[in-house]
Length: 255
Image: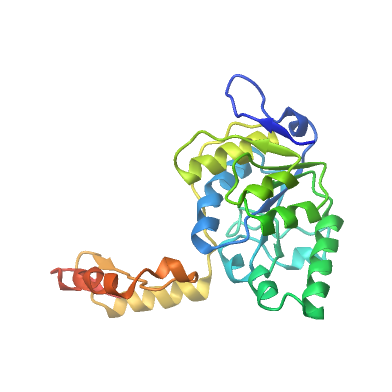
């Protein structure tokens, strides 16, 4: 039977987890913007507990946003966290999009079983579904953690049936909601923290060269990405031309 928790600064919410949890699994499979929205809450947890092991189940396409090496999955005693990648210790590939494109293929069943084995072998203490969908809830159940928490009102209502603990949130912004959700699951009051994104020396060099070639005026430039990884995020084509008007603003370099 699931229990419902409500974050409150007057008590140690989620005390059922706080006394022993030293490893936490985050389930936020995608998409890119949603992963970014979850990261400030995880960064806040990392600040409070730098010694805890934090894992993340995510679509491989978005794993570059996180700060861990897949080597950890093959070497249990080694952490993937570094000074340039400080947020999490390991990430678990969940190619849910590929699975949905070939639901009846034997390769899909094999990959799902592999994911299930890896999650259970990690022996996480707490799992938090920060997505609120049926697929993320199913992934969370695969981990078989003593504590499995999710939102009391998830995006997809049936997902709540799979949680052992349902957490009610009161904030308006999704970043603050993520803090409430994760905080209640581990017994902490979390506030959004600054996120350090991965540092890639080659990408930094490429960016510096690009900026040097644009002859920037007082470091003023604009970067526009008119497409997205998820179809609806692209918006209707008729909305694109007005957004390009920024190129006509004097002193703005084009990237």
